[in-house]
Amino acid sequence: MAVEPDSAGVRFPPPFVYLGTLLLGLAAEWFVAPRSFGIDWRLLIATGALLIFAGAAMMLAAAGLFRRLGTNVPPSRPTTLIATTGPYRWTRNPMYLGMALIYAGLAIGLDGPIAFALLPLALFVIQTQVIAREECYLEAKFGDDYRRYKAEVRRWL
Image 1 (cartoon, one colour):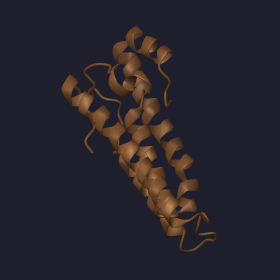
Image 2: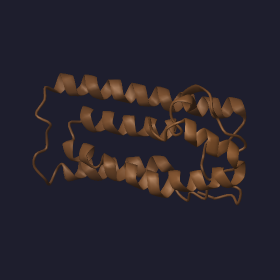
Image 3: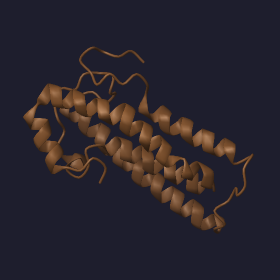
């Protein structure tokens, strides 16, 4: 992933963090017990589907808003403005929150308790390697406007 100079400097696509951690957890299910939540599969699938749907809706709404506003979605590209409407009224990171919901939905729907237990690891990497860089970049680029937005809107929920 090419990183442009006027960007947050994130060097890898954030979805890969979630995907890699999820695959690691699902692979570990073959080697470690317990390998099940011990809950009826129908409830697991229904819960997983609901989380996947909610996460996808949040991601699509956020990415669609970025496109309508004319700013870039990838954190390796320049940000042209601060989005403060749509899902950005409630969370500063709806795309990463959506990815986390999709991850949780897949882990639950696939009956993967180890994968689910690794979600905090993915969130830690996203927080320290992606969001922290983005926030420094946005503060440097937009100054007080971004600091006001940060004071008014939570990072996750």
